[in-house]
Length: 278
View (cartoon, rainbow, N blue to C red):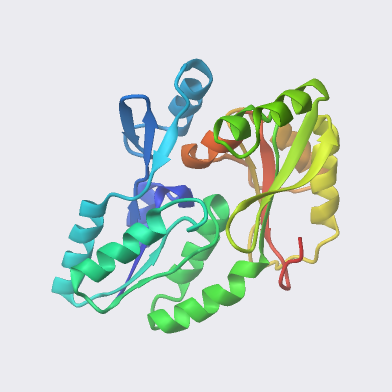
């Protein structure tokens, strides 16, 4: 059997993981001296309330090494082939940690795949792997390699403050941007890094830019469109109105990603019919 493993940045809950028969390992969120296992010790709502009220800026830690080793040992004992699909290596040390643990395990049926993405993008990849799990790991990886370049995320940020705190922009840029009411639009690049692709004056303008990009694309209708937000869904509802999506609902982004983009961010995730060109 192909055992599929991912992490909590995939937005897949522990309950859903059981239904899918996969392993979702929690990333760790750290506020000062306090540590929380994402999706287990802290919910998204609890995290965002803490994010805006705590004097401590949170950071995230990669997958637990001991937990990986236990999982690999169990798979080895059962003779399972293992496919690990963690958050992008450009965003976390989890990929390297999972590879190191695989080598230390001495088990040669473990493949660690660099998803080059996170959040609902990663969920799409993992669900595709689940759909194809009767195939070999090599065949699943070939399918993921074809799918990944077609998955698109655009998100408009309400503030530059969290990018500044996370070290992604400098203090001066954040201060000037705040004074000018600049709302950045980000994506996840083909290499898995968070990339600033547009700057708008005002959130409505940023949401309109995202809507125009989305509506100009030819989508793969086999995959649902996901509208996403951080903490406050008002801007997400505005975006849904602009792109004229019926059905579904706005979905809250997991804490691991929310740490870097902050409250009131809103965006969209979808799959293109052909490879994307940002």
